[in-house]
Length: 134
View 1 (tube, rainbow, N blue to C red):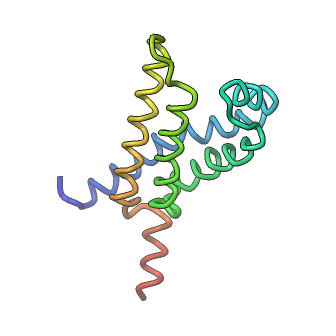
View 2 (view 1 turned 90 degrees about the vertical axis):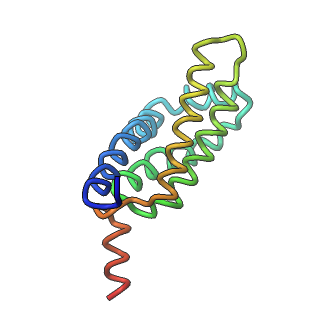
View 3 (view 1 turned 180 degrees about the vertical axis):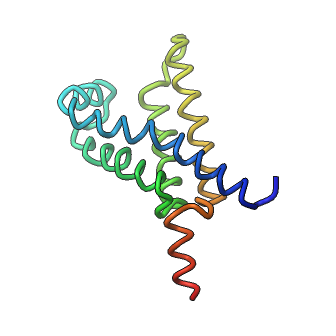
């Protein structure tokens, strides 16, 4: 597939699909703040990091959705997904946790591709580049 309108539409749909999970997860962590902190602490992750997690998931999810600083946010998400896979889902012998581990690693790979490919034509990044190049 060449880098044309079809690819730009595909990038838009891809951004929507990959961002929704993080937007919902970030929003739900606000409502379940104490429980999420306990879950993090049980995995050895300090609970004071939760606001940063919420900021990345909710704010970063919205940034990916709208194609705003897409390459940098996608890189941050790739690291986040790999680290969270290791910290929360690296449980050898637990098949469900191994599936979650692989899901996170796969999503990290998708974010790396997005970081390289960019947000496409239907994004704030594209609109900002057009204004900058005038």
